Length: 533
Image 1 (cartoon, helix red, strand yellow):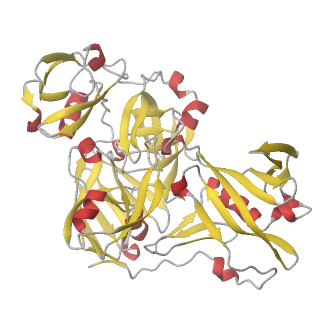
Image 2 (image 1 turned 180 degrees about the vertical axis):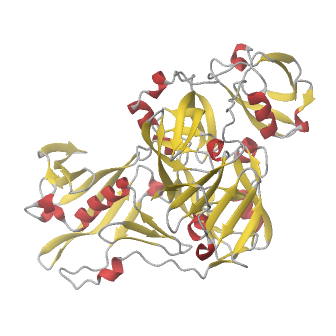
Image 3 (image 1 turned 180 degrees about the horizontal axis):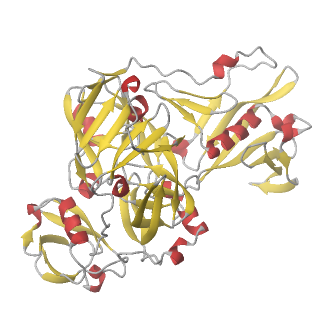
């Protein structure tokens, strides 16, 4: 596998193993790149510090060693803390925030190069050894001739992916607001979730079924609190309708009980690598996904056009939540309508202002379950479009993707399903065309049960505090065999979830358990039907 990262003086960029090129153009990415460039230019050696703002020097003892530290903010950059060894006076450590992570970089193996001392080994750590990276220099020169073209954003190769006829349309199933399509990997059928918030992924079970050998061990993070193992596998071919991708690289990640969470089989995810290369149109109402060669893609007439930037390959748009500006990651892989990140929720006092319900399991993804507080938002504005009474989730934790301060909220399938959604990654534009669901009221779960598919039953994975299920005395880990007299196998898990959302509050729903016994569940609203005005 090969990849590259660079900085052209204005933007950071990444060349992925599949050949996709991502330009990191969010304000946060630009700030981090400016600080990293300052370090690379050895701004700490300069008397003027290359214009950086400097804080006071402090004496610090760590693990028996004496250091002097100074806070530094390079021009246009993010704040750094530099650690200098008190005896050698060499910079041995830098500390920088990146999203919810703290990156600690150690500088070792200092050598004399043409009268200057340079570290030949740098070790960057995000707090998990699986995400630790070590760079060892082989040689270094001072004032060597540099070709600026070597740092320019590379052109993306187009010959590894193509669509016969220039466009292809696939049928998809919408399950739990997730898009599922059929495809092939190395000629074998696979069921794949389409996720703007993710990369190309196969589950370990699918990799084994497909005969894909996995290599490496890194750390991956999603909405859950835990980081999980990540490996790489390369296939010969990926096919989606008339689309063919040669030698695709997949990330091998164990999503835990995700197939049970969804209630349908799933082999993996297709994400950024496909969206980056082609025009994408998702007709939620018709269940059609259309992929188009970039040269043939046309902006849909009459659609609302929204510009986006890329943050670690995820599109970010601008919107308003109850009139306040909010930056939104666009995520077809999220079942929720709108999930507020904890820094934004805290900054705007959303728990109090929206009178949020008690914390409960709100979703499940990479890293396990995500715990959120449900609430009803008054109005979400996307360009000239507005949606009233959105069912929102407020994340209040400090781990996982929703703890990042780099965005305010995550826009998921619960909202996107109200539109035909198109993406043009070449121009970084997203288009919204309202469908028949646009003005529909949004129901929210009235049971308080988080259910998993479990053979011929539904397993209760969690019970929401203060919910109808808790008041009925229902406990986690029990298995439901019948709901309202109907065998659970008569419907899909997604259909039962819809039933427990749409059935009016006050309705008594008998639950019969696989181990015997029956409990009358009186459905009740967990959040109001309308936001406080």
